[in-house]
Image 1 (cartoon, one colour):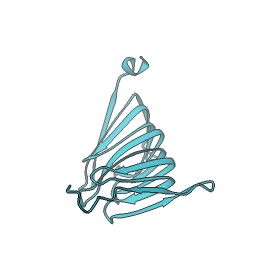
Image 2: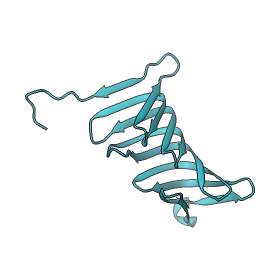
Image 3: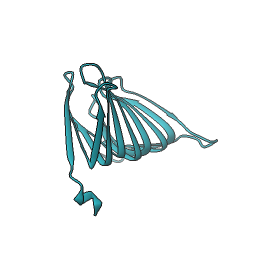
Length: 158
């Protein structure tokens, strides 16, 4: 109910040749001198085909007010697309994004699924760089990283 009573704020900035980052939230605060903007409550951020949702998103900007780092916390869910056309969806408790580098770092109870091919990663830390096409995953507390691949039957057509 509170979600509908608070006005939704929209914050947009243009990134260096990377498109527009649009953020909707229940509330925001900004400190221009420190280069920090904080969005709280039902936060949804979109840039190109990427989307991230969280309870709180903090944006750190450079002197030209371009976002250099984004930290999302609290029930983070996301959809990201790579330069090669792969699309990933997932969830975590924390995400650190570097939008110019297209670097995504997810922490705590991470579940990441590649949508256009059945591949799934579960771990406590997952890092994906969509420009370089690289990924890294780590388990936690003696729990392994779990990867699931869909292996097609050689007689099966897709």
